[in-house]
Structures are given as structure tokens and as C-alpha cells.
Image (cartoon, rainbow, N blue to C red):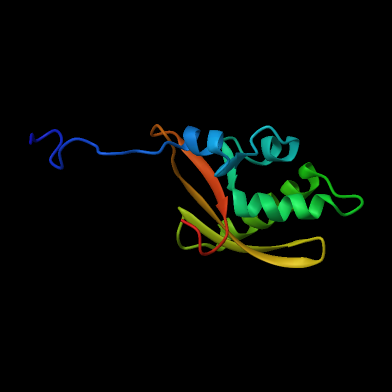
Length: 122
């Protein structure tokens, strides 16, 4: 054991890139409305993606519009939060209210990333 690594060698790690590749996270960074609202990489959990996919089955729904609604509600919640790393908010998607949380923190590097998830997910 050294002062540089007091806990010893890493036994296992799971990167954000691997989670996206495996489908555990879904990268939303290329959606037009996400690019308009956020300057950092933005992903959601597969559970949130399932809500979005279900909404897409309804007439008149698209990913950009749903992401716009989510982004708008998240930004409103950011203004009144006491925890800048974890923002809790609700959004209405196709007539149903969904509680969500947005985590803002480092990804695979020290650069910030945003991860949208359900309240019970980590």
C-alpha cells in the first residue's frame, strides 16, 4: 500500500461509457432540445428511457419535445435547490406526473456530466 493509493488496487470499475454501451444508461446528448438546454453530456437511466419510449407511442410525441419538458422542469428546480449536485423535480409526460432526479457530477473523467434517473435509483 502506498500514500498514492491508500486502499490498494482497484478490484473492479464500471465506467459511464460502459453503462451507455450496455444500455444501463441512454445517451440523450444528441437530442436537439438537450443540446439547446445543456452544455455537458446528458444521459438517463434505462428506467427513465422506458418512460420516454412509452410516451413515444402516443400521437404527437417525440424525443426532443419530451426532453424539452424534462429540461425545463429540471432548470426550474435547479433555481430553488439546496443541493447543487442532486436536483429533484416532477414533470408531466403524456398526462402522467413522474418524479425524477438529475445528478450533476464527474463522469469517467473529472468533467461534469448529467444523469437523469428515478428517485430510487443511484
